[in-house]
Amino acid sequence: MNRIAPSILSMDFLDLRKGLETLNEFGVDVLHLDIMDGAFVPNISFGPCVIKSLSKAFDGLLEAHLMIETPENYIEDFVKAGCNRIIVHAESTKHLHRLIQQIKSLGVQAGIAINPATPLSVLEEIVSEIDLILFMSVNPGFGGQSFIQSVGEKIKKAQNFKKINKNLIFEVDGGVNQSNIKEIFSLGIDLAVMGSAIFNKNDVAQNLELIQKEIKCQ
Image (cartoon, rainbow, N blue to C red; front, side, top):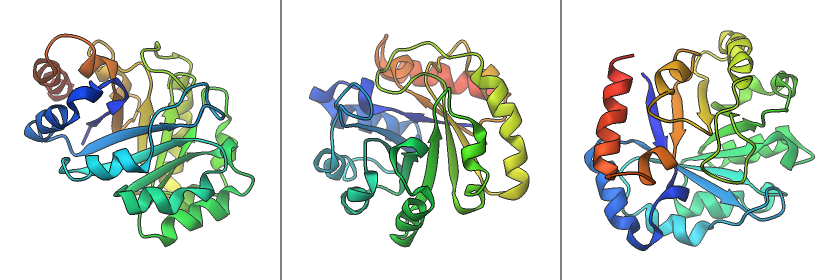
């Protein structure tokens, strides 16, 4: 079933509780948390302390997308804060397999994010060990960017990975909006991260209603 994962990076931080209540009302079951350190990507966001508060107000799964260097030093902190899934970038660590083992040993799901210019080959030796592939359809670090069309071909090519790992989730992050969401799901995506399209225009409830109608009409 096709689903969305709202990114709180675009949410009004002065009224997070109200925003989460709206997501709960619409049955949203995944919240995407963009964690940035200003080193791996040119931006800084938030950390475990904020997530701990979010976990008390959101009914679904919390996934932390770690756009940080040496993520192995912080995995346990994010799990303790309430994250149910940890997504790391292949380029962020010297020992990717060890990092995935570390995440799984803490009883949470593990995902790997693939940047637009990162080849699928980095996943070949680890795909059977992970729960999710996050296809970055923009260069990570900032919200509001446009979907990079060439990523669509990468997603199509990656379908063979689901023959190796039948429970593998395909997620896409970047430039997803009401006008392209049906096309993106048609590529074989299970979960789409959406930020600006939900929180930056009009009423959040109205945006969610329109998005859900688009998904149902697919």
